[in-house]
Length: 367
Image (tube, rainbow, N blue to C red; front, side, top):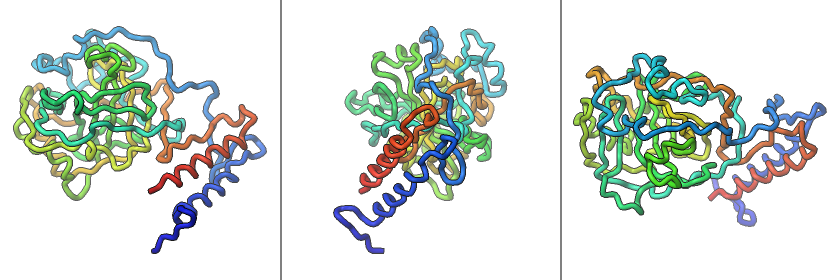
């Protein structure tokens, strides 16, 4: 169909804007003070909630992160066979109040107008290192990667610059399970975690002693019919790291950008923890709403690995933890925020206008 442009605006944008006008009038408050969307009233969150829940600083030491280094892989001090026992490990925070992963219930989340993420240096990298640490496989940049080429992220509601450290995966024994985070109690076959640390603390080790030390991007993985060509470089050398402590170098280029979902504009955000002992509560979690696809064949390659006890490395995910009053935020794909405090303010018309204006600006930004 031919696209018609009127004053620089195409027909698709015109239709969208007309729809926004309808939305504006549907958002006008009803007699009981609640905005109406579609045919139901929206739930109103408690007033007075703030974005960053203040949590007391816990004291973490670098020795708590031995599982990040090869020296910490030599003995299976914990396993996925009995995650309930993690809370009893020496120095463990696994019984804390801000634990991860969680079961995300979208209708209980609070919409937040976070800006978009900016992914800096998320290009192509060769000679990455892959290591079997007995609990997962960890991918690191080559040691000689120039400092000005190391990936980092800004925006997305983060207050600081977070530099890439490593990424790893969690998967199940079959594709009915595997992801750590759940959506409405439903799991994906696997989940990719891209770990970044707050550069204001200087080093990764120092960042892990602070409650805002890490920003982890959680990416759901679902099964598609065809191999994912961008995921394949992660799979090629799996046969060379079958055993605990095995490590090797990837021979193919890894495209960071293409490991992300096609749409990174909608995501969930909450304050949480590492999902392995000692479960330190130092992570700002971003869980993208849209998954990436890989083939069953590609996932099966990870299921061939052995863990620290020389058993098949599968089901390396922690069960969902209790939310315990934390606020789970949600960024809509368009970045617009619908005010949820109308019964407590005197500006519902202004709020509706601003929300509609945001939607129009989103439409006008289309290329």
